[in-house]
Length: 330
Image (tube, rainbow, N blue to C red; front, side):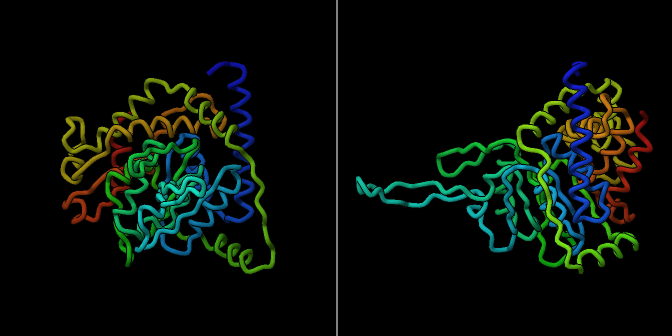
């Protein structure tokens, strides 16, 4: 980082974070950790998957965060009858009034926005879920013989009900890997739920003011890329990701026994980017090993496929990640 403008930009980011969290708190009670992780995802240019049972304000949280950004926002409600063209757009046959010729005209779908809320993404079959794959990875959409570029910044913030619930389809591993973070929302504490019951049943209407526009967000994203990651931090992030692979020589014995499939190289990238974004959000110019540990569960949990032995022992991906953090030496 340069000593002048970058330091000032780092201070501005810290102030913008406070303003963003303040706006979100006007509607959302608690969930400060989830809000911070969503901001990390935005700053790193990644996508986030928010998982929780119905009724925990997942959709409200994401739509509120979108209102704090002066960007084009689009919401897609995923249902069993949703088709891929309902997401990407479709070609319509139109007749030119002057020449009488008929030509196909592309009508862009809701994916052509900056912030996409993919609501209840696992309520639709895999064929439709896959319509987001190209957009999430390549920032483009191919329809017929034409490829259309998406305007950055581009984020997919998806909500998902637990796959054990009725009427859900599990997301394929290829699509899960496109998400930088998988965030778990749990039930609120008593005092938080009491405040929720009070605020949401009153006549008080709380508006949200935009805090950051697209140009400023892109500057913050560039700043995160310029944050230097010490070699020890990068080494630890890579070793942590590689330790999830049962066929890796450095994998712990419990991984070799209980994990069917581990995280790919994208996990290493997101661990480093995530700890950079976390440090920048907190006003620190350099990330440390604690930042990697803080972001690791959200980066790794959806990239680890437990084997039969883990399921028989009741070990979840979160359990395995916790054991990895305590086992893989810094």
